[in-house]
Length: 108
Length: 132
Image (tube, rainbow over all chains, first blue to last red; front, side, top):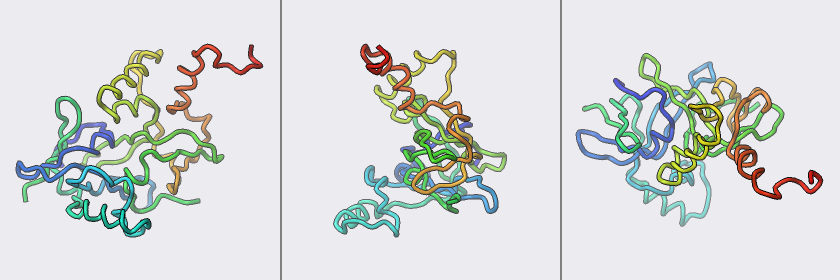
């Protein structure tokens, strides 16, 4: 990770375009945080990239979420291409004119 | 004592959730989170941000800009910053975010408190009948 605006807000990351080798994979719809072993500090460990804009806030991507099966099936289908991108795969987060950020992944 | 789970999904489990003080009273909502990189490139959650100064930029667009502009205009300080609760006072995350300190010890102003103090009280007749 070579470049990150400091400080950054969670809302700068949510909705940010995820770019890999000049092509857009999707936008960031959630951010995974992990607690550092013995302390209460938490760090970003992954970004959830999606091509679907809606439905993430309902939590149907989580295994333990229960609810009407038809909504569950619809939202799982809508988010079937979502992927969790590990933080180690992020190269830069750059701010763009007019607001928002672009997340660029490292070339593999 | 609930503690902080080992993993959290920020949007789903933190954003827009209630912040609750050590006495069980509501403090504010989580309107945004402050993230800071360390020297190794890890991005740490360093604070909860709250109030119109956090919500306006998050909403964006004309309405978000308007909220931020009104908030700036009504603040006395020249360069106001949003309400900020350092992450090191967070002791647990369940349906709410639990703190180890009292609401009175935090110099913060959530959207509801700010709206009541700066907008609602200025509306003629906003006071209680007994105040007249």
